[in-house]
Length: 102
Image 1 (cartoon, rainbow, N blue to C red):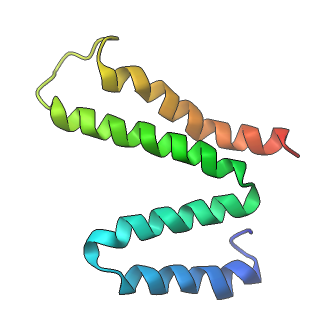
Image 2: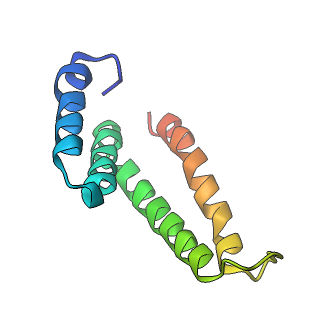
């Protein structure tokens, strides 16, 4: 599915907007996350696994940043700093994975 396809413009986008605006405020991020998984999974279901790993790493990093807010000096022993390369590499790997699976 691409952004300019009729499937996206007339079915997927209206469904996302409908569910997003009808959901309570605390569920809006979850709705967008689920539709994001659906959109990328449409192209290749393996992307959902990659995104699930990326989501878990990013969520863990967010929890660590909240737990240790006063740290001014990040070292290689810092949990959030140690896992951030995995998050960055998984974001850039999506395009590489897409080209190798063709």
